Length: 67
View 1: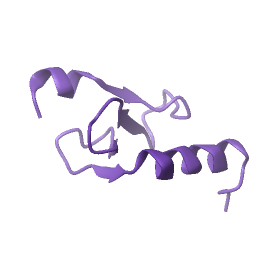
View 2 (view 1 turned 180 degrees about the horizontal axis):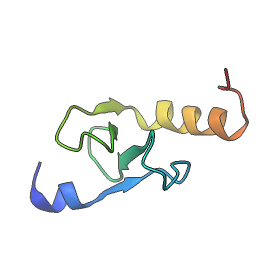
View 3 (view 1 turned 90 degrees about the vertical axis):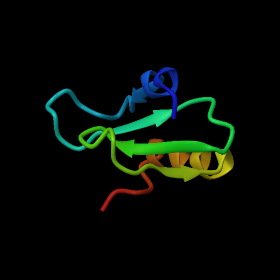
View 4 (view 1 turned 120 degrees about the horizontal axis):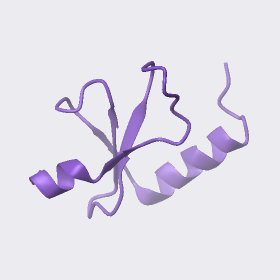
């Protein structure tokens, strides 16, 4: 990834400011939606299809993924 790409990661709006579990996503990636752990910015990222990520976000907003 280029330096410009690295700067385009954004923290999930569902992540708090307490430094706990946070996700970052990269918008506009040609292969899908990369998602990574904000505590490991140089670690691996999972890449979801746009449709798969959209379905996940809808489920989270609807409260369908609570344990």
